[in-house]
Length: 107
Length: 119
Image (cartoon, rainbow over all chains, first blue to last red):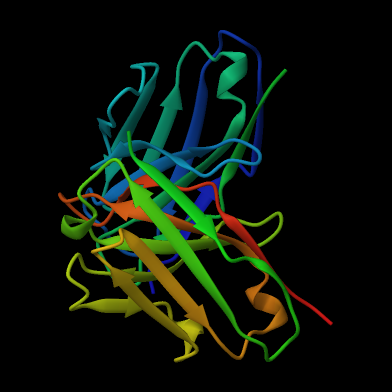
């Protein structure tokens, strides 16, 4: 099973600043990596797939990068509505696996 | 727009059974693979199972160990997860999610249904 590790667990950022989240895979997953946003009490929402392609309707403040085992989700110009948990998922191997999540708090 | 509505969650004793359902609308259900993903309280997401658009292929997480049965009714746009021999560690919110046709990422999710396994 491909283990996905996310860091940091929690990140506190001021509005207007940038948040950088990391996701590491225990083996290369190529660019078969997705990011999801989840707000309390809601189901996750797809943000990024293919490591760097934004899903429909996702603002360009969100960007993804990386390949192989190291991936990054960057959120520019943070807004209060970006306060949420962010999850990465690899889909290169079965079983599909998720990271433990990173929580972004807006100060 | 795509809607996925889960139902069937509740409280069940260890060793008990439960059947979850997911009602789908807003897309061609019979052409879409579907997943179940769960989230234990305060924890991350954990993939549970996948079924191909026609039901011909199913994949399960190792922890399922033959306890869960996944089925779909394309005439009723419904996905089902039958769970038996439930354990306290199965306690979680269970989400159904639509598979993207390009690859195995999940492009739409429901709101989830809570399953609590406890005495």
